[in-house]
Image (cartoon, rainbow, N blue to C red; front, side):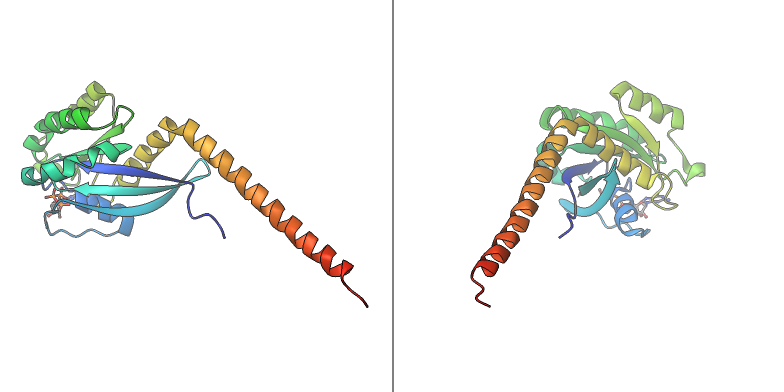
Length: 212
Ligand SMILES: Nc1nc2c(ncn2[C@@H]2O[C@H](COP(=O)(O)OP(=O)(O)OP(=O)(O)O)[C@@H](O)[C@H]2O)c(=O)[nH]1
């Protein structure tokens, strides 16, 4: 049976309530946009398989509640993430200012190797903009992160940002992935040879025991 994926990575979405995390995730995984806002309770996740450099990467993307009252729950997920998307809303200055808090929480709880990117969502709302592209890009530079302005509504840069994070995680874990894929290929090759040999032995035995 064909392998469905080679590696599985866990990505986490963080940011204030209402910045559009759930909409971004639905746009990426289901190609849909729902303009209603139903706050996430605790955490939720969706999966998608990407192909990067010939490797089938399955991403499990955790969508966390932005509301303060769920943070004891959501913080428990930081430790197991390999990649994090920090999201703010370009029409909401406070969501941009709160990034410092989100980033310091991650520094406290997440592993050092965790890969991060910064996303300013709702870039279709140009007239309502409160955070300039330059401010977003400078903050990303300060944190050493890649930066995207996205719109879950128009689909701008949605796939690009999730895929970029998956690429960064893949690069960071490349050595382990190579070892894993190497041993998996060896295993599959050996299993195939043994199956072939088994078939040949059975044929030989059948020929030996044949009396006609
Ligand atoms: N114009 C515009 N509106 C958006 C966009 N993304 C999300 N929204 C709207 O923003 C509101 C909040 O979106 P959600 O995805 O529910 O926000 P969230 O960050 O998941 O919120 P919590 O679950 O409370 O943390 C909804 O009314 C969406 O329709 C976008 O790209 N453009």
